[in-house]
Every structure is written in C-alpha cells, then in structure tokens.
Image: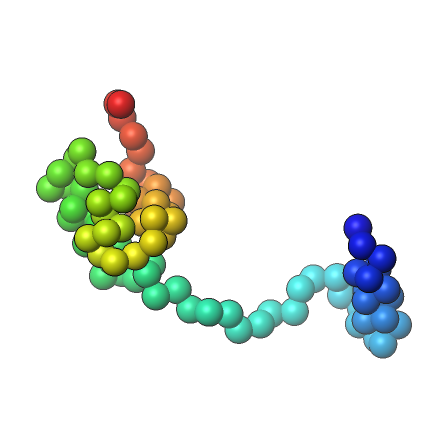
Length: 82
C-alpha cells in the first residue's frame, strides 16, 4: 500500500469521518446495457445459436465487454459445445 493512501486516510479520519464504507457517488450511466439491447441480444441468439459475441457487438454497435456481460450475466446463456 502506498504511503500517500495511508496519509490520505489518516487525514480523512482525523477530520471526523467515522465510516470505512465508500461514500455513494454519481457515476456514468450505462447506455449499452438497456432493456432494448438485452431484448435484441436475446432475439439474435435465439435466431442464430452459433452467433459470436463479436458479431453481436458489431451488430448493436456496443463494446465486446458489454455484449459479453449481457449474454453471460444478464441472459445467462452459456456455451454448450465448441
């Protein structure tokens, strides 16, 4: 751990902070993981079970990581055979 981080924590707690949890903050909203895109990915997979993540991402104009997240984490589709 860096000394700067320890100093920062010491300063924050000496200023009165009592919780170690992160303070909630606004982040960038996810624009690719929408209900519409999830539905489109599901339709694409049902129409062609041999479709790749790259093809899904290219078709929808989203990143490979977002397409993979929708396919695996949200829709819970798994690879059956190679």
